[in-house]
Length: 115
Length: 114
Image (cartoon, rainbow over all chains, first blue to last red; front, side):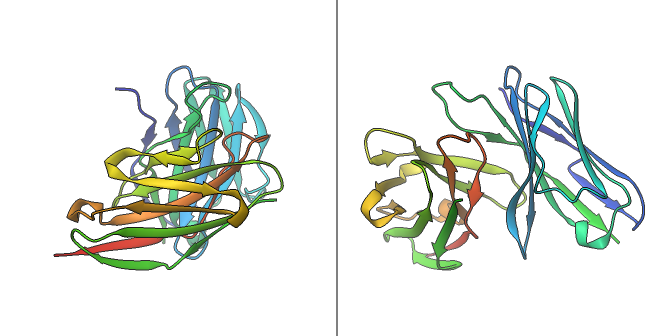
C-alpha cells in the first residue's frame, strides 16, 4: 500500500558530522513537508516543497540545515555540522492540494541522536 | 497567523469511559482542522479532519470531533475508551489558503486504565 518511506529510521552520530535523511513521498504527491519533533518544542514545520520547488523553509536553521528534492521521488534533509541540540525525530509528509483527500500522510520518522 | 492550544498534556481514562480531548485554535482565515494520533515510535496517523461542510466529523476508531466556530474549538471525543486508544493525540490547524502547513498543538498523552 502507498506510504511515505523515510530512511534511516534511527541515526546516531557524533557532533560535527554530516547527517542526511531521506524521504520517498507517495507516488503522485506533489507536496513534501519536513517536520521536527522534540520534547521541548513539539512538532515544528521546517520546510516544504511543491513540485520540487521550495515554498517555505523559514522554520529551518539556515546555517546548518538544507533541504532538497533532487527528483519527484526523493526529498533530502541534511545537517552539516550536526549538534546535540539537533537530536529529534524528523518526519516527512506528502500530499497533494486540491484533491478530495486534503491531508498529508506522514512517514514513520528518523530518530536522530547527536552525541 | 494560526495557533493551537490543547488543554491537558496528560489524560487518564478508564476503559469504557468517555474520552474527551480539548482543542482550541486561532486562525485569521477559515481553518482546516485535524486530529492525529501517534503510537510509540510511530509516525502520525490522521484520525479525522474538518475542511468544510458538516461540523460534526466522524473519523477512524470510533472518534469524532465537532467544529464550533463561535468557540474556536475542535474537541475530540470517543464514547467508550479501549485499551488500544492509549497514545498521544495532536490537534492541528492549517489555514485554507496554505494547504498542508500544519500548526500542531503540544499533544495530549492518553492513558487507558483497566
